[in-house]
Length: 130
Image (cartoon, rainbow, N blue to C red):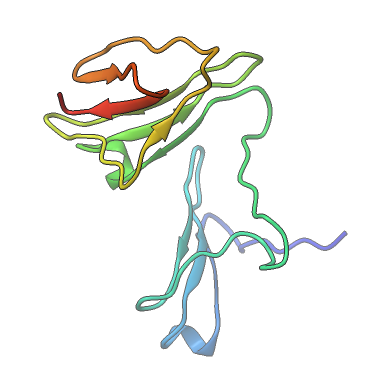
């Protein structure tokens, strides 16, 4: 297999066009260093081929967490690893969970009230903000 490495204790940066008008991938040097995907302008980081679903997963039995601002002053979505693991949507401060349509549950599943979330008796939809 091939290997690309920096010459010494330096970050490794992959870009095109000498870095002008180009997105980049940066592998930060040192223990616990970040790997940054930085699109140019309004570019996006795209997962998947367009003809099949994209997949993001953790390596090993670890939770997967999505947040912004490096987790500072940010809400988050946590997918807990293992069988029967929870998916936690955690707002920051007075933030709300906003849905543009009904949130439906299986009629065999229990819905627990935390904060301002209730289950209606009409059909198995969750209503937020009551």
